[in-house]
Image 1 (tube, rainbow, N blue to C red):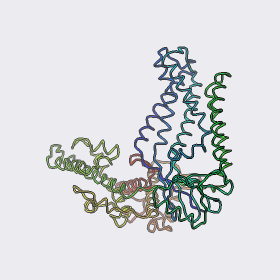
Image 2: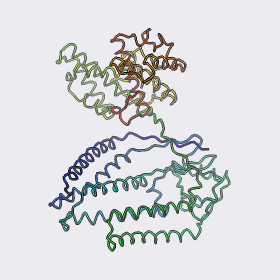
Image 3: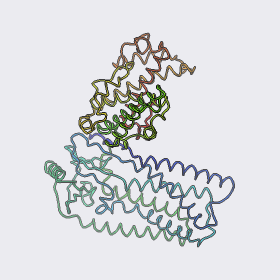
Amino acid sequence: MAPPLKVKRIAAPKAKYAGCLFIALASAGAAALGYLFFKGKPLAFFNPATNFLAHALLVAIPALGVYSNLAVPMEFETPEGETLVEDASYLRSLKTDWWMSLMLWPSLVLGAGFAAYFSFSLFTGQDRVWSTSPLSALLTSLLALGLFFFFGNVIRLKAPFYVSEEGMRLGASFFLEWGKIDHLQEKQGVFFVYLKHNTFLPIASVRPVDTNALEALLSMLSKKEIRGTEYSAPILASIKVGLLAVFSGMIGLGLFLWNKEGWDPRWVITCLFSLGVLLSLALERLRGVHKLTRIKPRLSAGLQDAGMTAQRALCLAALVTRGKLEAELKKSQARGNESVHKEIHRLEEWMAEQSLAIHLSDTETVLMRRPGGTWTLQEANLACWRNEALGILLWAIGFQEKILPYDHPYDWEEISQTLPMFSPISGFLDKACRRPEEDILRAREVAELWHWRARTTHIMAQGVEAPRGVTFEEVIEQAAYAAFDQHDIPQPLGKDFPVFNKAYGSLNIEEYQLAASIAAERHLALNWLCAYARDWDDTPTDT
């Protein structure tokens, strides 16, 4: 059985901003509809332009929400032993495969037509009594959301094709063993795959991305003795003509139901969409899609690559440097200290020259843009604590041999020697090499464990009750010995995690704050490395 395809979501700032805007607009819209509902008023305005805008937002806001979701790029990891032949998309394959999904589109075509017709009527004020009840408006938005999400996924869908000794991987979810293939037809550089289940209708089409992909495909076809042809069965052309006729018939049916039978356009769209899905499923079964092996793709741990990690490490190094300079200004209470201000200016120039500023998080950008001497002491100290996260990132890309114990903070003077501070960063980026995934995942679990121990002390101090039937001391003892058995922590002391040569529970306030801060910063860095969030600022550290 072929392994599942690993999928990684790539950070997309534009999608994040669109998502925030969608939440704000959707909340405001819901509040407005709720107000109208409880007041017993319709959604209507006497001014045609205002009325048009209010009704257009019923569709525009769902469209924005779908965009914020679909705008996040997906990256596929090539499975071991497989060769990428094509990185297909719906639009790229539409020229040859349009007939396979044609039945889905009448609902969207009519929906677009209805939207244009009613928008024109609203905007020009031809229908001055146009109004919508709050519940009807909500129904319109939900229908738009569903349609946009469905068709957005169809259009955005990427379907990588791979070949291996076992068979062909058709997209993210289907695998086709060689024994099920009858033949391939080649036409103008496109290979159509036919199953033994149905030798007249192709199950898929493949367009090799380059000569290497073409050679890999032809080599495997020859090795597996899959025959090739140049011509398709005449019945395929007849089926395409029939599908066009059905498509036209569905459009006609929708117009008849709306114009002659007085159906609500939304029910017309829903009816055609449901009919289109049923007809498409029937065509899929006829083509033999049900004969393919379904393999659900798996969301990869999605570790950040070496380049992104190196850039993030340099940003943290700049932040720590700035934090130390700001702390020096605060301690001396000499805001006009020229030598420190010159160092801050030098840091800013270096970041500009090396194009580092674009890699800062939003929070870091705000801080770094502020004039020297305007940080609070707390902001400066928090920036200095990023040294622990920096140490982890440097370990992850090979610039630190090991992760220090969780009662030993990283020394800035030592790790800064491995950084190209105030120098070109190209050599540093080239040398960055990420450690194996299993090492980083294991380190993340250890960091989370130490962070959990710190938070347990905190909630115990707050007087929170332990889970029923156990005490916090028993939970800590079990966790400590389990972690020791897994070689995650040293030998427990006093049935507790060992730190500063004593049991964790016996730490004084200064020791606890140091241990807790080390764990929190390292946990943050490792969760970011494992892509727990799109952005550094949003990376969670739940335990």
